[in-house]
Image 1 (cartoon, rainbow, N blue to C red):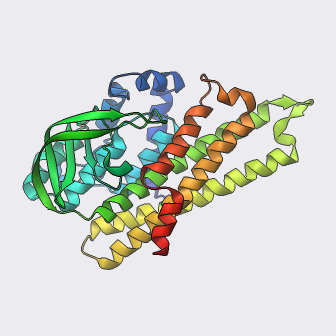
Image 2 (image 1 turned 90 degrees about the vertical axis):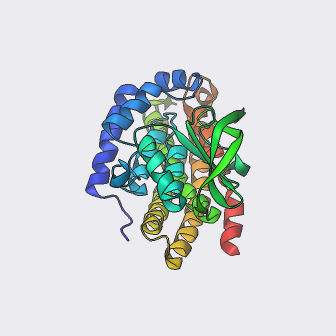
Image 3 (image 1 turned 180 degrees about the vertical axis):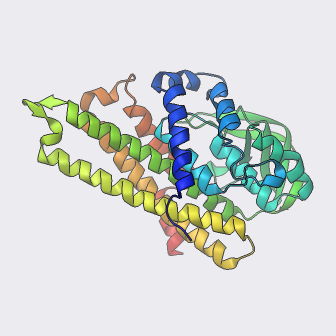
Amino acid sequence: MLISRTADQQELAQITGALLAKRADSAASRRALDTPVGYDVSLWTTMCDQIGVAALPIADEYAGAGATLAESAVVLESLTNALVPHPLLGTTLAATALTLWGTEEAKVKWLPLIAAGEVATIAWPGCAGGLALNAGSAEHVFTIDDGLLAHVAAAELDLTPTMDQFLRLGTLRGATASVGGAVDPAVLTAIARALVSAMQVGLAQRGLDMTVAYAKDRVQFGRPIGSFQAIKHRLADMLVQVEAARSASLGAVAAAVEFVADPASDDARALLLKRARVASAYCSEASAHVTGETVQLHGGIAITWEHDAHLIFKAGHALGQLLGQAHEVRAELAR
């Protein structure tokens, strides 16, 4: 099991980063958050057409890119690092649930549509107590009904207020129809935790980069604040947290890839659950710490609406609540 990025994944990160640098600065992201769907539809379409972000974990036979969840995690990290709102997390989880537990008929019907960029989501108890991601924008909604994978016809999604504007969560209503076999909710939660850990790493890296740049530029008492030993120590601690979180996240994502490749393996399932819990607990606390330090070390400017520090801070704490708080996940490990 390779716990590092391949050359192709590095190239994917560079391509994604270059596109986002051109199309998704802070002002563009804030405008997107104010739209009814909460993201830039034009940018999403471009990313699906040019990079194939929605198609990455979908097999070739269903018009997908034939890649893995590792590539999806690369894109999720880049999107979160750039503070870009997107529907990729919910869409990827819905596609993965179809891949693992959907009937062949369901896969043929929906996976090509998702690969083409149509937004999907899945609601299950492990995510925010059963709330659906991509609320208000999902074209294809799935859930777990009586333990089976089900499609929700004519779904109505009611938005639930969140602290983090980047998360669109909501409750869903509608008639359900079974489209697959028995879902393993623990596995679905573990895969979600692995992907969210990549987002937390991207967010923490953004906070660290912003803070280092500010510490070089901000002058106090006639010298850059980054030259003070106390600031150096805090920045070094932030770096350690980011790099350790990255290692934990890579391990969890690698385990998710291995499980999807061999879902019948009990060993692969056990490894996925363990690594996903480790990554979730560690990355949640690391992200909260680093984003909190980002606010502290920026000083008064960080609490203004115009600065991006408050967006990072809220996202860091919200992602840590989405799939269980760190102490709850550690309790799962202990059990």
